[in-house]
Length: 238
Image (cartoon, rainbow, N blue to C red; front, side, top):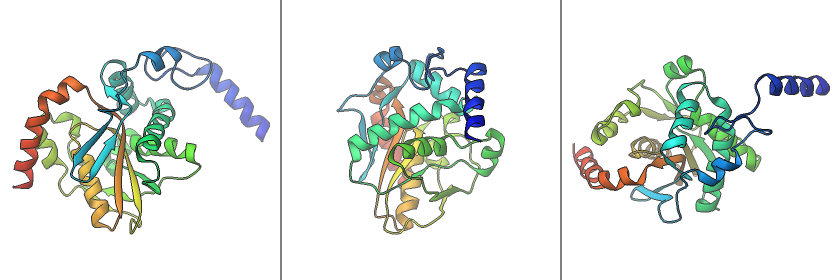
């Protein structure tokens, strides 16, 4: 059986050789090619960690622009599931660097049952599973999405994104007393991660920290920061 599995893997590599998730160049081993490792838009020490709301931090290794945006969109919307492994490894690395000793379990931002059926996979779950492989553990399903709301990427206004996450997530499993690393693909306004983190806290989680593959490009972030702050105040006051 082991020999048959190895032979199958060889055949699959010949038919579908591994490609870099960002530039799509064929390479000898799965992962990110050396050129992209050098040239990707990496976040820096100061801007790779953000406070989404008081007491909730998120870390990300990349800026969501150029090849990163193309690669993540291909992974998320066009069945580019092979990107889960290298992206998950980047998330694991940034989480270990930023939150070492601060979490004891890992979960993800879930998609709705309807979207899961249509897409065939939950991209954030794949990222969480990939990250956890490096630590020799399994992620826990601690959240479920109970409403198939419009995709956040379809909403350009930050206030609309915050409203769109209301009453969408419910607890699943047991979060009581756990320190949770919550994983998502992209952290834009932070509304989805905040909604999920608040659900986990309400279910008894002792601590929640977040990690994503990418943050919005810095120039866009700087221009919209004040607007987002005002939108949040208006949202929570509604």
